[in-house]
Length: 214
Image (tube, one colour):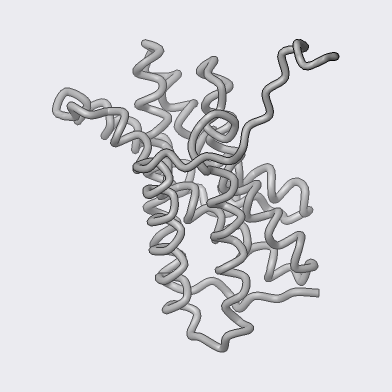
């Protein structure tokens, strides 16, 4: 069994930032699809809360995070309106989208590991729970926007979540303070994702056209 210490104040603060960031990525994606304001709000909530909801259902962790803390739901509905108000001044929406998505990916991965660790599940399940929390919301956003999810088409994405989860869940073994380790994991995970975007680091691709047959 594997057990992480209870979530610290740094992770709690980062979780609020990540919820807003992911909701804002949804607003940007919805804007590119010319959705109405209701669609923007719904997509924001689904993107920000979808990964955690799926994790909780699979792990049997109840009540769901946004049911226990309705303020999470309120934040994910209001954050898209901030994006709408600021959109006219955002000249590089693609860059803003990728940076906000990277923040959400890293922080949600850590949050997922934290929740699973407190449930005393095996180490491997802790990592999987972190990846589900980090990646699933973005996948739902892209599917609802009729896009190929970033998880399947962009620079290192799931790999960033995996590495972030491994680093964060290994903290107790090194005997480091939880807040220090949380901040360090966030910095490393975010840097890795942004460097992957900047230098277009990719996993090897499988290409099959049918012409390979002898």
